[in-house]
Length: 538
Image (cartoon, rainbow, N blue to C red):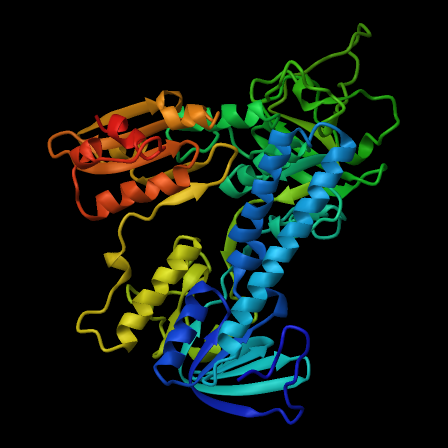
């Protein structure tokens, strides 16, 4: 049963009160799977979703699936040469956005009807907040709806973390990943604040479309949690696509630019060219040099010998005052200030649990120091009969973890003798969809060394894999960490075509405690990328 549809809300104006077995706040992967399971077991379920644009959750609407749709379209544009001229770039981008919108709309509709068409499920579109331990009010377009439930499940996901930068909320052209994936026109220049994996996926994608991309990183180390050789290989790949990096870069302010773009005031530590000066004191047209960021004499910037300075975000830089002898004086300040001008800015500084407006205190639900809903190993909150699933509970922010959270919760509701817990979860893999995908599971060398383990490192260049050569995708490397005496696989890092598929084989072997020799001697079909595991673990 439904009292809302994707196109209209039919909530009765009499402000009804609903009593139900289960209330699920949020239409994400874990929540929607749990709703269907509870309904099949004959229980009455209410699902509250704040926006009709989010039926199905983050992944299908603004996360993994729309971004992967655009990434595949961008790769096709690069292969076809459609990113070579302004006209073909725009056409390719327009077609990609159209396809992305079609896919997400179709999936959203299917997800909605998968729940709303069931007799035991009521979908309500509106923002929910707790009014008591087992009571919630949902603010719909036609008035509030009160819901009382025996069991409540919080599945509200996460939202982009926005740093406290003046102008970031008010300047047109500044986007989170959600907005940037829904532009009608492709930006010719893009600045990305943050070089985490979300930012890097967008850097790779837009570079493939033909956008000139500049990434700002607040410290000096690229991907500091990854092994140095792996991080260097990922960076080299992105630079080969034309992506430029500026490290030790702290964005101080954002404002509209005179040309209709976006102007960023950026302080860069360790710069040896010029002096710090306020961005608004160097307006365009004053005669100051405008140059590519590679014009700065600092080793933390990168350049390509074929780059066009007008293609990327331009940097306005002002010299210091002349010295007594009339010659320009170039100081070596600890920090230099620059102005970057670009068409669009992506803020990719992480995501934070979405708890705003839930009034969790009314139910006795506590938060962690990092703002996530506090849960135990069974995902129970600090309030009885209230659980939290998915990104909102502070666990790994992956759709498949939200699905696994459903398993944790369901194992407590279905009468299992021993419920499945978060501690039973093994070896969570991850994949980042760059031009050459990067996937990993378990420990890397940095972590194994820090843990004091006795290990050996296995390496294989992707160029040695026949299928990679056949696919004309020989870039990358494979790396594995194996415990020396036991042969136990501690982890694997695959920067390789189809790594997002192959990593699951490694995870399975690790889950089953199979030694490295199992993958070394396994019979694979040929030619495949997976058969590279024979040589990697040799």
